[in-house]
Picture 1: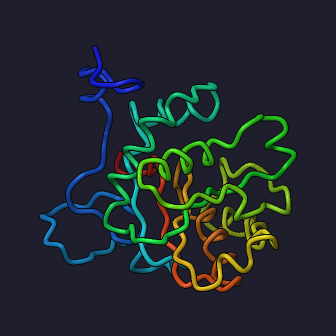
Picture 2: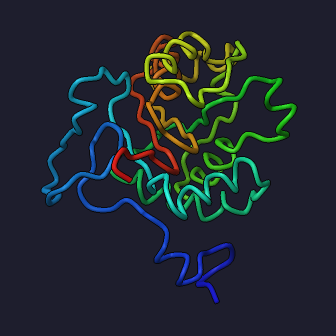
Length: 220
């Protein structure tokens, strides 16, 4: 039995590593200690330049969190996006503001053609439905096909994605001065979010925040 359509049963809910409590204000990774309401940063975000202003994630990328993310991405489990929108809305709540524009991390057209859908767009659409904010599915374009990031270190991921994402010329006027929330399914090094945020700022965005369904955590 579940509480509502597409929800998790009690056993799965208990096994899903939702992120709560104190988190890094830039990448959403859970941190030890009490949440005092003041922004804190993890060790990585204290040493790395993050080109976005704030970030969150709904769950850790391990256990059932990993299973859910992979089911959405590779298992054609589009139904995961429905509760995913609710989980993202809860995680992103501190960053949301009226007039914010929600956009997914884009896929290159060749990858979109072979996969048939963009899992990040399914999540961003569900998040927009939950929050009532504007959703622009094609705000960002991946104009250059890149190799898989799997197996690459942090430097390799950033080098691979450098300049690969741009703002759709159709939405240049829309993004000028706008607050943008970029959505992805999984955040690991932050390279994809960095490329997306840099593209938004280059096109004149006023502020960029990021949110992921799952966050890879070193000690997970």
